[in-house]
Image 1 (spheres, helix red, strand yellow):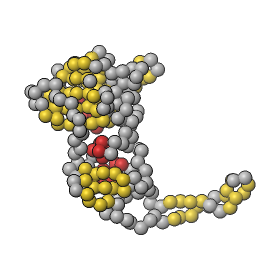
Image 2 (cartoon, helix red, strand yellow):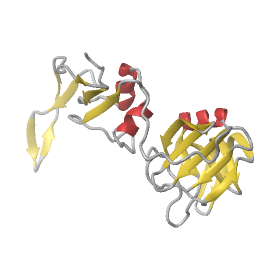
Image 3 (cartoon, helix red, strand yellow):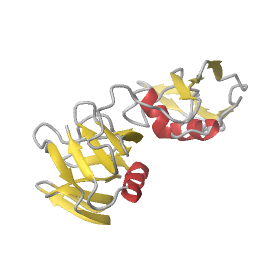
Image 4 (cartoon, one colour):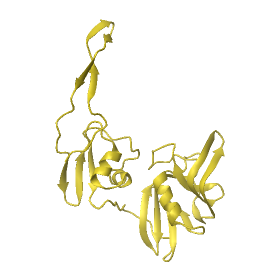
Length: 223
């Protein structure tokens, strides 16, 4: 199987040293390597070997799974942090279920749990886990509040500001306590570790899913 890479050719310029490590550069074309077999099947997962120039989005599209699923099963906090030669587990079903899932706050209806230790958010419906994803909660100096709350207002996009920052049009925002909310994030991809001023950061696509799924009044438990 062959997955496209970002570079069709590697362009190199190398002709001769002029002085003190400064080189005269001429462009020559080096063709890409021959196609290779990138993956082997192992039970319920596929092992993919990352090739030069491949991005996580291309790999996910090829296998028909989401970047989020690949990132979660491989504990990748940043989609840009993959490298040539890295072995990635690709879930066969396109769905990764985490271990050590906290119990649902209630047995009926919808509810959300945010685990600040595991840096993960969980969505439950009638006591059953329906979705989970890595998140970024508050930094030590600006921790996310713990306790039981509920979503009290939703905005498709809203401006956020505080000491030292201004973030226009933060997407898919759901406030659950004062200025603490669950929302999309366009300024970082470092999910899986604390990054925020107290809010619960999600990739924008995941925030959209939670926004469309949860109604005002949905319970939110932060542990």
